[in-house]
Length: 205
Image 1 (tube, rainbow, N blue to C red):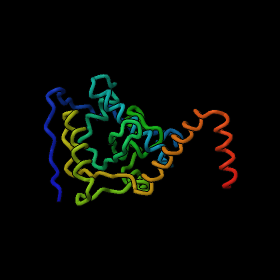
Image 2 (image 1 turned 135 degrees about the vertical axis):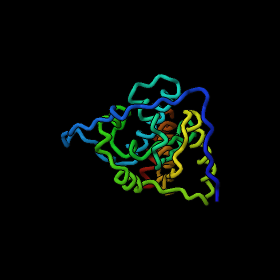
Image 3 (image 1 turned 90 degrees about the horizontal axis):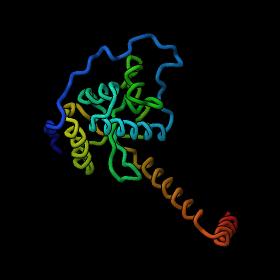
């Protein structure tokens, strides 16, 4: 079984306690309450946005909402990994952040009292599955996630879990990227070559 190790605290940034008073406990109308994601594309956009806000936090450029979300990273247990198609690097984000539509740090804080981690994990299980410690990829992703915490000077929750895309979802994303690539190549062809390809496709259909 793989060992879970705790990251060393960073000397670049000191922890500051963020007040719980930032969380909005006011009653929100139904239309203003967070809505669960309905597609994998929404989830991926949320993961990317969390990573951007995390980057701004590390650089000291985040606002008080970003600071609140990142200062509480040690409380988040369910983490979701996604390999960015452009940079080929893994991005990580917690379930409550990525399980609701169009999430941002400010929206997270303002609607937090209406969030439910059990609901987000349930909806995310449509596309993701938990990575067992005995699986081949666990050690690599474990180190990458710990590096994220180390960069912020935070300690990972002892009960953390890493979730990854189900194999069929991963294959669909690869196919989608391939289609996008083929289309870009097609646009760069001459009119004669485009006509020839269209003819071949129509003959097959």
